Length: 269
Image (cartoon, rainbow, N blue to C red; front, side, top):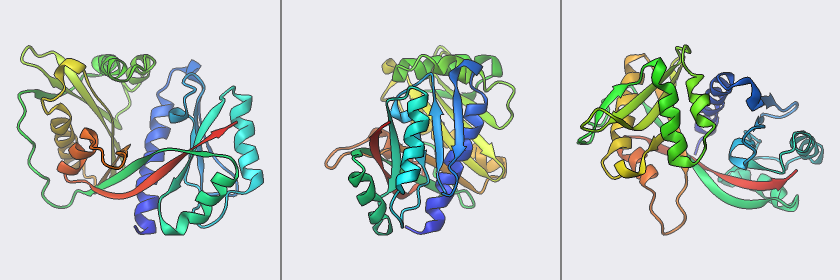
């Protein structure tokens, strides 16, 4: 995996988080900090204290994590009352020294996330057949998209957060609707210049297995290409060895190429 891809997809991801954090309700305590002296970015959501929402991405792989940098990170989360957080490290040979230093600091491995890209210059794969109808959500429906995500993942704060995307033109929210026109799945697209990021995909339990996310991926990619984007990026939880992941399969069928995997390290503050 080339450095270009590692920085490219991660840069899009961080840009998407900046946009998303800007839309959060004031009381959520969303913070993004570029750590001084490093290439890393710290992300934190006080209202959602899980490591998924409190983490550090972009640590340079070719060097150990400095004691003073880790102390700074730990102090930040500790002062916010966040007990544990993630540090990300790319699973590449040139990042071995970073992995070793994180283990030496007492951090533990906790799964991994794959990052994927799709160059939009060529023909996009045809959308898979689905009985669901795909449409854009209106701004007034963004809270409904958040409710679908909340029901899908057990994260109720996503309902007001998604509602906050209304009036922000960089965002597009899509629905997959059943035969009655009722939204049963959602997916979000961020257009940031010529880069696109796909995220916030969720499907209600009763509608799973009907190709909703595959259809939503195709619709968002078509919208990104129409908007002049040249590359799209998405991330998803990596499957454990010997296991299969519906999300990963959907992403690959949509035409994405995996460009790397980031290991999550769980650290105490």
